[in-house]
Amino acid sequence: MIRPHSPTAGPAVQESVASPSMFDQIAATLGLSTSLLAAKLGIARRTLTRKHGMGTPLSAEVSEKVLRVARICNLARALFATDQAISQWLFKPDSALGDVAPIDLLDTELGAREVEALVRSLTYGQFV
Image 1 (cartoon, rainbow, N blue to C red):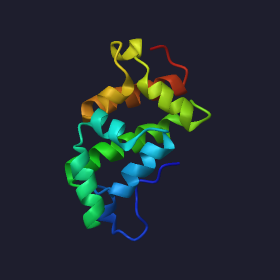
Image 2 (cartoon, one colour):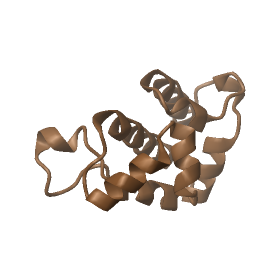
Image 3 (cartoon, rainbow, N blue to C red):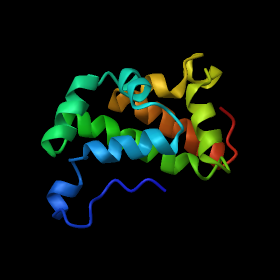
Image 4 (cartoon, rainbow, N blue to C red):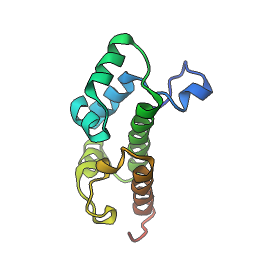
């Protein structure tokens, strides 16, 4: 399971800030390079490198993107047995999403909500 919260951060901070290492963890869990995941989410690789080097958290905007992916991956665990299966699903165009791959919608909250609705529908056996 991808954990979006640091046990040492306060409640207000936990909800909106991700660390560069969390980004790396998500990429590793999905078997992706950090460069590929960054490109798919519209995150500059240099930003991640700089934040890593400085040991600072990601900006609110970048954190939201990282936390979206974590949220969708955690929801998808109800459907898929392995992280590899989740990763394959994320990159496969889906007719329920207009023949767009789920990963390509996760750079915005609206797109992530579409993906989340699809996962919930599939989880509960609803027709999509």
